[in-house]
Length: 544
Image (cartoon, rainbow, N blue to C red; front, side):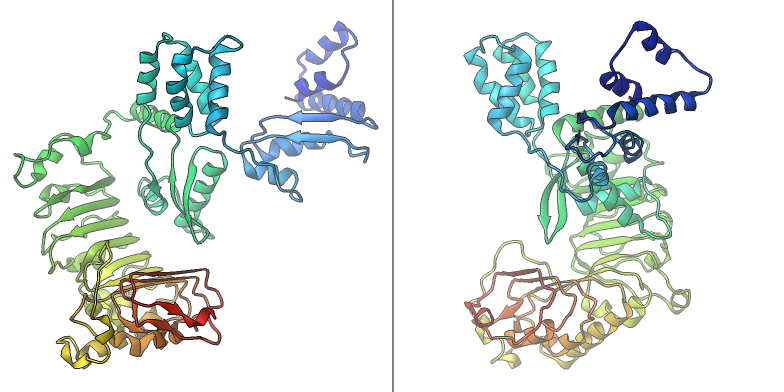
């Protein structure tokens, strides 16, 4: 690179001088220094414009930038890079110019230039050609690659249609799931200063900065979903096929039923491939009436996601390396095995809709902390939110408390206005419920790192808002709070507005009831997002 730049700037006097700089020398460093010194002297007191294209590292830029003298004479250096950190490192005082994705017309124009040049464009290719350009999603590199592929094919509409049909449908990848999969595969390691989740987040930002991954949906300043460009997806699949002797991509399409209407057969899945060394298994696409015994042989699992109707689960502590456990249960009485407390590497435990979590035994509790790596726990029942449980998961960041299935679609409760005038009508109205909420909310103080809390109450008409009596005890470190089916009076909002770090407040499915939210003098000092969904309220006096 240095030699190329040298010959672009320094005039070539004669062939002898040129060859003298091309001759190999024994002292490479001295040779490079001589080139750099002569290049810098040739630019001294001259006005120049130099374009440095596709710089890939900050170190390379540091080595090159010292060659450009700053004589305050209007000279300029234009630097391009796919890496945003290289650009900001080169000039931290100015915002970089970011190139936008091409629109459909620009994409079609570039495709035509690569395929036809200045020749006449056949009209019969325009419709399918525009479709191909659109599927390249505005990335010039993708259009160039596709154009190269098309140039080797017969120029017929049928051939172009074949190419257009190879583009898969867009699929958004949840960022949280992607990070858990990275961790399970062992791609990342924590450091003394950063958790493995934080390192994964930085790696994802780096991939987005290199345009290798596309950011898709954002919420409250945080990336929620991303996706791969089709060209990059194809490359990843080819690389996976090259490295792996067996490709599992088609597994969800395998027939896993004995007959069309019969129950799922677990052995039919596990009979295809030897899974003994498997680290990631996600089979939530199929419901198993009982927990498959074959899974118990997969002792190297780090990520397990399963849908089952089992009331009780076999001992799981033999999954010593398991970090993520996701269960979709179809039984109202499901209970986790007690040896769940013997899984020290568990970081993420998520059950839909909810499950009973037995408290650790006295012996397990004395080996405190029991699950010191657990960061997400959802969804456990109210009766399981005890001091023994919370003191055994001291590093928890996200907690879900759920007493019922949370509806996906809006529900209509025409009698919701009567919830507070007719408390004594409801069978679940007892002081024991209030005591449970009191113990639960106050025990949250044992979770000093808790940032996100989600509470889903019982569906009507079996609950009255006993929770409202204890909201003042919510921990101040909460950043996100989601309430659903809690039927709180709007007066209880005064307890939430005092939370100094609350940034996101989501109120779903009659979290609060009543037509009006009265004015609050002050509070919500950090709130960035407020969502009110499926409610009977009709006005916010607080906005006035």
